[in-house]
Image (cartoon, rainbow, N blue to C red; front, side):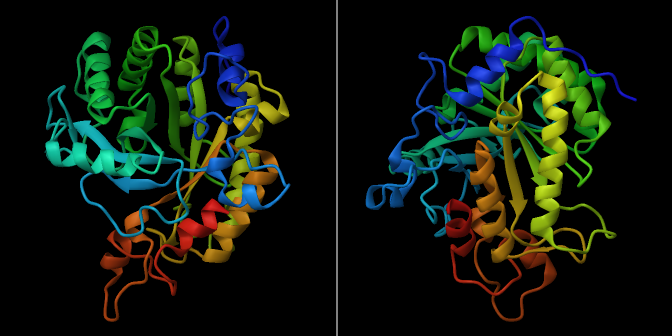
Length: 345
């Protein structure tokens, strides 16, 4: 059995403050840290009803380089910008490994996303290219690279989507934890989330080791975002049910890792689903699944729900291939933006 490390001194408190909003000094980031008094602007229906607004935000993943008509569906409170990774084998951050971090067109794109009042969260890593911790050689250099991307986006929120080889590379995991800790000392308002693969049985040993590394280095983690998708060919049942089963198993793990209460562990979690057809044959996440996940998340006061991705939130054109569905459409019958509306509630 894996032994769960106790949080470093003060980390449990920091984690709890981040996810419950009980710190009077926290920034206005209700998406990454549900506040004690949620802003009604994140829930459009609140003004027309006496029902309290939900603490669960909607924060989809978007292309940082290319706008999509579906970006604004569901009125997101935060956009996850995908992805900041290494330029080749260097310690220089680039958008998707192809576009300069200070590219003027990208800056205009980010400004446009913010015009609705939404914030942006820089997502580092993803499934392609090299995460910066795999190419930078020191924690100081890595923290600087992360900071450059955050400054270019004008963001105080960093998401680390760690999967594949990056998740099993213990050297880069440790270096990343040290760099994030340095960055949080410089930027006291910086909110950190880790986006990790999950199974219906919960997080695997590599993901747990990553969280333990964060504990060892006194990283204040606001949210653990689980990717409720791509379980494997043996998982062919209801994808909404799988998402809830995965969340429930992860909830138990987060309580142990961070020493949290039931409520605190739910509030420190986020859920990201791949809309429509998934990368694994037989897995299709439907609009009813999205509504089911949203209802569950609200009932548990989960921090935020998300999806991959806004540019896929549309029906494929007739004659489209499976490759098209994996990249720029959902592969299911829908109106444009329907998944965004379902996830927003």
